[in-house]
Length: 107
Image (cartoon, rainbow, N blue to C red; front, side):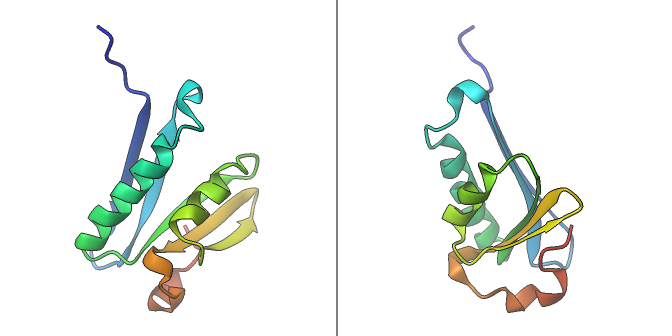
């Protein structure tokens, strides 16, 4: 009672890879309060401690609000539009994307 899930954030990495697919979902009523940004930054800190250097994300073309959200994590994010989706490669701490050049901006 009085307990509800209003946001979910997770990342999925692959063995031997130094980046991971990230997803953050925030209930409409809870958006624009900084919750998603805080969750994303927490995931980045956890991922960094586990050896990750970047997050990847696929964002539906109509979800333009997600792009500035990801850029707050990584101003150096590489964003490309392909097949109706934005493919984002967001290195942590402004780190150059060359560490994962072959995987950059691909699902």
